[in-house]
Length: 404
Image (tube, helix red, strand yellow):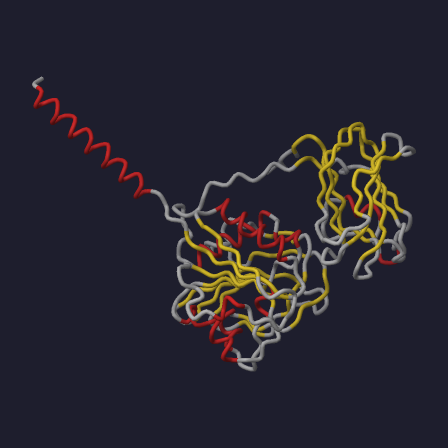
């Protein structure tokens, strides 16, 4: 081969490599820019915004920008919306704020301006109760009208449209581990229900997941998401991710990432024996229900005094790596200690939450050769009693997948 031919071959090879490199770059998905707005009353936005952002970025090609403003007031006009082009540069906005007491249609108009122009939206939980300005414009955007919620209780979420792309991976039902079910006064004719939950107080089914068409704009909505237990649940994060992609008309394999759920440790309390200082027997809130794996049943003491306790004797002595306490009202800051023991006589403090001011109740620790676990209730900043939906005790082995 002549020198001229060698140079020509090298040039062709270089062009081929560059062409392939360019094609590979073109094949990369440009992440959707997601703006997550939160703040206001009654929720743990400090943690929940992180759960949502991280969960979505693990599951889809999205980049989430978090804006938390307004403190804990319901009257805050947050600085973000003061900007004329507050949503510029974003592909979708997730509204997770809780500002119900701003009775000014002009302010609502500022918030809705980019959505009226076609920017997709997602509304989560308390967003449904925002901007009650005497008009129905915000409710029209959300797709539902809601002004109140019921009591806190775990509840089943039933899939009503398994063929819809948001819900096709959901399954028939999902057990929401903690809930504050919103009462829906009106489902707008532009909205399409995707899932419902039973209202225990009224007896009817409440729409809790839906899609909405606001003019030329797609909106995905859910009233679920009050408690951290819900917001960090993989099923909830999967739903919000798929709903957000649907709103952008990007719910496809190009934007979805292969997601491998984290392997949960085995629940060492399963099959154990639970006893307590007292039980609310008249209401069937027994100690055994704190370790039955059912988030809809619970143990409750007979009063709100400090010192009430729940003890679990594990089926076998083993190494314990942590625990999670699903208190009845996780919005409150519970104070407690968790102790571990090999014989039920000599105890070691594994969790000291005597000065707890947060509502995060998952703990990691190392307690080898443990046969007994005891939780002692010391108080609650909202006056709640010692009452647990579930006590999850983490073993040192991964959980065995359920048979299909």
